Length: 141
Image 1 (spheres, one colour):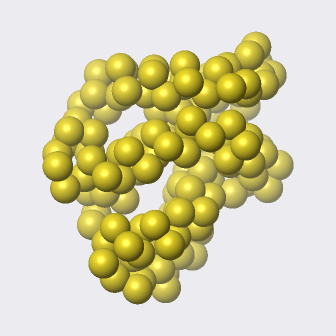
Image 2 (cartoon, helix red, strand yellow):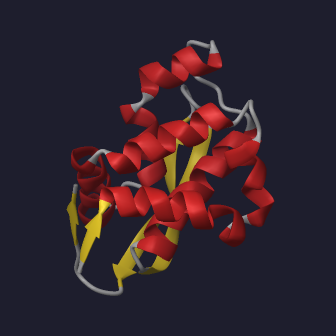
């Protein structure tokens, strides 16, 4: 199966609120929208998304951890804090976004919560790894 990163972003935009209605505000609220936009930016970057998938699949590094560490400087700027501490709703919204991408769009069938030890920055303790994609896939522009 081949997934276009543009199609992944479009599906996330179109379907997120239906699948994660408790997190509709993550996409729509003005104070959360910059974080949503950063998530969309990440999935539109084929190289970055390929690395996030690779880290998830081979090393069991949750997509949330890869995303946060990749965008650390941006998140420091966005939060206005050196520790990039995220509000609980934002942290959960980012997790829901990556759940949408991996489970709903890419078709991973299982998940596992793992410790990510991001206690000095972001203050995220656990995040989800996704397991058993329904079928092999590649990403394209």
